[in-house]
Length: 327
Image 1 (spheres, rainbow, N blue to C red):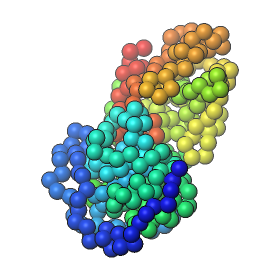
Image 2: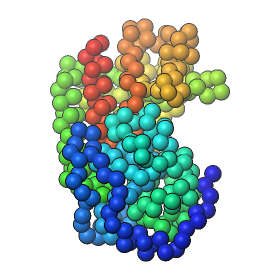
Image 3: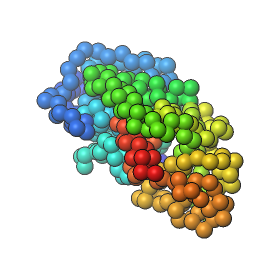
């Protein structure tokens, strides 16, 4: 549970005068930054419609959702703190954290005390946080909210998010490069799958709840759905999902409404295991599905964060192209 922080009001003045002392690390495959970024005041408008003003590019950053953490790390800045560090390590392999990063609690309900103790010059969040906790954080650091998703334009929102974080960190060029690399990899992947253009697919994750397997198919409004259709495939799941992430909800019986398709899925051995391979292995309905009978089921590698940024999506494209070209 979040607790009220013990905050000395003078921290606000101290933060404005701190020398750039955050830990800066290279993005995966990138060069190490020789020094902390420099620059003047930065004004941003976040997902709440609020203006967030930074006196200079942020270097001591705390991230409260995994996509925000990925954005910051992939742009070459190692956060001083992040929510659910262990979970991030299991699910997000594209932008690993250093051991130096402090865990500030669970996503959605972090410890304000732990965040305050790190003296951040920026807190980056995605999902809604309790208003009281946000007000407490804003007493000692700017808080930048990113949209978690946008079903009308999931790829565009991912790009806007990385660009927003790039501005906050003084890493505009690095953010632009990530967008360009993603676009190029998507086009390359589409060419690599040209022989499968129009092939129907279902992408899902799954977990066991109350002894039953719950399945979340990803719609065209999800980031993964949009990227996969961008590869030239056709999403066979046409039922609606939620308004933010484009996630639908069903059980194994609901999958019988789909028909022929390739079934792609992601789970994690370190967090929940594989209900499709384990709990459903002897399920008669699952065994009757067309993709099971024709051996068109592909589990993608663990650690691809399906709600992430350009570096996770490039990892997803690589895995999907490999899986389908093996078929």
